Length: 227
Image (tube, rainbow, N blue to C red; front, side):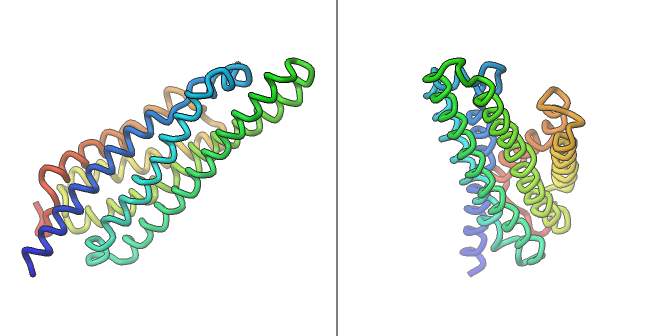
């Protein structure tokens, strides 16, 4: 029975590591440069494949964002059921916001197609509508989704820290990274910063920690007795 439980824990650790890498890769591939540019109303429709590909990879992020806390719940709940359940809840919330972000992205593509048909006849109307949709998408992606997933990872890492399922230094790194990511989203929400270098720098610690954690889980697994 112990051997069976150990094997199950090992598989969960490896799968969690893979999902962490999937989340990082799909997050990068979901970026749609034509939407972030100043002339997005013109370029989105002429680069439809880029937009649709970005939407596809953004949807794939759900597998990672929702799958990680669910996959680790059976083991983490043995140590702290409340934190494990909270991590699952925030992961699911992040998944819902990802879907909303994709919908807004596809609506922007539709607006771009309509703008291409009418030209500059109703330019102000389309610019206003496009601005609202793009602003809404930025808030959903970089505030709502990021906050939900960062909170999921924060609770997730709290259990790691308490139980030493992974090294303490890796857990501390994750707690600091999650906190900085939350800070970046809040600062962006109040318009103190934009989607600029400052925002990226604040998110580097959590991204790098997730990569190291993924490698650790796949190579070392979890150590219930501490390290």
